[in-house]
Image 1 (tube, one colour):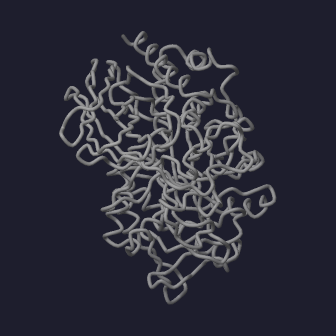
Image 2: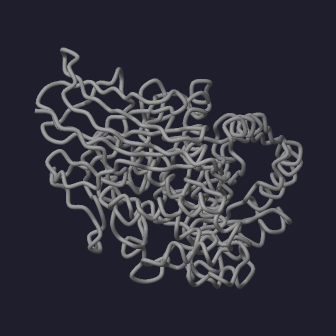
Image 3: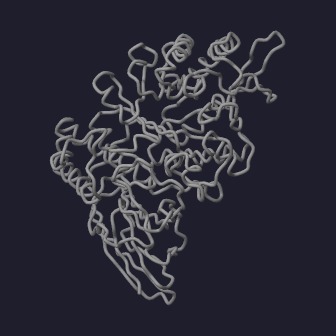
Length: 537
C-alpha cells in the first residue's frame, strides 16, 4: 500500500504520528520568493518521486530525516510544544534527494519541497510515486500561483553567530587553511540564502560560550607581531580576504567579535601572536594597562583597513555578551574604552536591561524577545534576539516546538518594526562551555545543556556542504512574510498591515503572544498575498 498527501510546510511528520495534517491543494507566492510544502508518504515498498511541472518553476526535493534529541524543550515549557510519538526522535535534517529516491521509514515519511519561480502564472504540479516497475502507485496535485509582484529585498539585519572553529573541528582541517576557507564560503552562502546578512567576524577567537579557563580553537583573522620594543604590528591579509569572501556570498554587514569576555567583560579574549604564543586570555584583566595599550594600537591600525575595504559604515563592534546589572561597572569601563577607540562606529550587544542604553554604554542594545516591550518606543533602531529563552509564550525555534511558532517571529518583527535580529547558534557543534566537540546528528540538545535546536540550524554535510534544517527553512519563511507585509505597508501604512495580521486573532500580536495553529498561519499568508494582489494588480 502506498499513500501520498501534500501538506503544509508547517507540519512535522513523525513516523508513528497522526496523519491528520493540514493538506494543501493550492498555494500562492510572489516572484523571487521560495515556497515550501511537504509530502507525507507511506509505502510498504521502495518508491521513487517525480514531479511534472512547467519549466519556469524550479523544485528542490529533500528527504526529512529525524534526529535523536536529549532535551527537546525546557523543563518548565508551556503547552505549545510537541511530544514526539517516535520517542526521542524529531524530524529536522533536510537531506537532498538523489534520483527521486524516498528514504522510507516504517511509518510516515516526510519529503520537503522548495519551489522558486521568477515568472507570474498558475503552475499545476503533478506529483507521483513510482515503484520498482515504474508503475505509478500514488499521485497528488498542487497548483502554485505566482503573483506578478516581486518579493521586496530583505532590509532586516540578521545574524546567527557563525562559528568558524566548529567547522574546522568537524571536518578535521587546520583553521584558516585553504581547505577551511573553502568550507567557510560554503557555509556563508547557505547562511545568506536563509536571510543571514550580518556576519560574525573573528578578529580574534570569539570569547563566546567558553568555560572559564578553557579555550576554543584559535580562529584569528588578525596577525599580531610583538616588536622588540614591545610595540605591535598588525597584519590584515586574512581579514581582507574574509571581507571579500563574505561580500562575494552576499553579506552586507559585519559583526566584529567581542573584545571582552562574555557575561561581564572581566577578561580579554584569547589573542595569539603570529607564532601561536598566547598574549592575552583568561589571565588578562579587562581593565589592565597591557590590554588597554594593545587595544589602542589595534584600533589605530584597524580603522584605516575598514575604510579601505569600504566596510566602515557596516561594521558593528561588540564589547561583551549578555552583561547583567551586576556587571554594570566592568561593562561600563570596557564600553567607554571601545567608544573612545572606535568613536563614530556602531556598538552593539545582546543585553536586556535598559539601564545600559540609558547610560549611553551601547548605541544598539539587543534585548531578548521577552524584554522587547521594555525598549519598544524608547530607542530609534530596535533589535531583538532569542536563545534558550524565552521559552514560554513567545516564538522560538526549538526542535520540540511546532513550526508555526518558529515562523511567527516574522510577524512579531514586523509589528515592532525591528531593524535587526540576533541568534547565537548558526552552527555551534560543541558541548556547553565548548569543552569538547559533539556530533550534531546524535547529540541534539548539547548534553542536555541547551534545548535541542537552540545551538544550530545547519548540520555538517558531506563534501563540505551544509545541510539545512527544516527549522531554518521555516525561519526564513517568516522573513519572507515580513517582506511581503512591507508591500502592504507601502500602500496602506504600517497600522493597516498590522490590522490585517490581527483581525482574526484572539488577542493582539506581541512579543509574548502569537496565534497558534498551522491552518491560521497558512491562511494568513494567503490573505496577505490576496491583499498584495488587490493593491498591485
